[in-house]
Image (tube, rainbow, N blue to C red; front, side):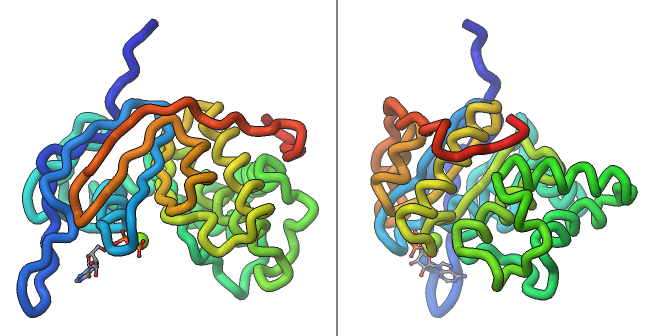
Length: 244
Ligand SMILES: Nc1ncnc2c1ncn2[C@@H]1O[C@H](COP(=O)(O)OP(=O)(O)OP(=O)(O)O)[C@@H](O)[C@H]1O
Ligand SMILES: [Mg+2]
């Protein structure tokens, strides 16, 4: 079997926040993620999960240590290169969906394509395919407040996929969802994983972490354990995704 390439790597990463004193939110974290892995990050509130994900997503810089994306050390990149990496390689999904409330589902998905300068025909095809991929083609013209939480999160996943990223970083994507919608969204992540996308997903729900092939636990800013597991398989029939 071919050895998978390392797509993300943290080497001795510490993140300190400086308020009244220095607070170490992440302490000497080292691990690597191979292309095509699905990693769940778990741990109590305040243990450093979001801090770790923001660092991996180049939204913030480490105080010490180095982060590599596709073998390239992030600390040597300027803000333009970092923005380019974020745009080209990484799709973000957040707990609060972060959709633009005045734009319908299709426009929310189209926005990053406008920003990256794609022409109108190309955008229309991409938006249609992506909404079909996440199973909500028929809701293309609903505004966010006319969508259920699960549907909103699926729009957010479609938006994260617009630039065909190799990595999806998700911070509690099921945190605002009821268990049925949460399951639908996890089935979707599981299917995307099956397409070869690398996924790093924060959750505090064991039934969500069960979909991943590896679980990294944080406690007080330290990696406490890092284990492989047999992932829960998606129930393909339940989510009638077109386009796969
Ligand atoms: N900008 C900041 N300035 C100061 N301290 C911060 C900042 N951001 C986070 N922290 C602190 O760092 C620690 C880790 O925060 P982080 O957001 O990474 O936790 P988390 O594991 O994601 O928690 P939760 O499950 O509640 O989202 C917390 O104690 C938090 O208060
Ligand atoms: Mg968090």
